[in-house]
Image: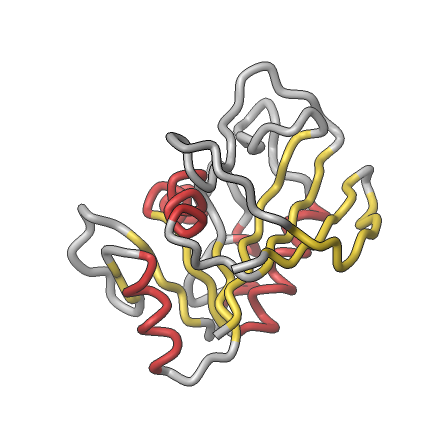
Amino acid sequence: MKTVLWATLTANGNYAQSGPENPPKKEALNDFAAQAKAAGNFIVGRKTFEGMQDPSRVSQDEQAGDNGPFAGMDIVVMSRSIQAIPGLTIVRSPQEALDYLQGKGYQTAVISGGADIHNSFLEQDLVDEVIFNVAPVFEGKGLNLLIDAENYRYRNAQLLDCKPLGGGVVQLRYSLER
C-alpha cells in the first residue's frame, strides 16, 4: 500500500499552525479534500479530527463526517484516549491504521493532520510520498517534521511534481526512499 503524508508548511519551513488569526488556506484545504477523495480515506490524529468538527474553526462544508467533502470516506483516527466514535475507526498506532485500510482493500492511504501523527509515521519509515503545500505566510514559532529526532538521519527524496495551487500556495510532491 502506498502511503502519502499530506501537510501544509509555512514559507519559512515550519509545520503550519492554523487558528483564528491564521486560518488554513482554502486552496490547501481543497487539495486535501481531492487527495482524500481519490484515496477514499485518510488517517488523522485526535486533536486535528476534533478541530475538523469544531464549527467555530471550519465551515459546515469542511467538517468531517456525514456531510461535506468527506462523506462516505473511511476516516481513521489515531488516538490513545478515544475509545469509540460511531462511524469512525479508532486505532492506536500507525501500523494498525495501515493494516486496517489495507484489509479493506485500499491501494493508497492519506496521512493528514498533526505533527505528532506525521512524525510517528516518518519515524517508523512508513511514508512513501509526501505532499507539502507551502502557504505564503511566515510563522515565528512552529513545529517540525522529523524522521529521527535523536540521530539526525537523512532520507533522500525525489521531486515528483511542483505546481501552484492558487492564492500563493505552492505544492511540492516528493517520493521518499524506504
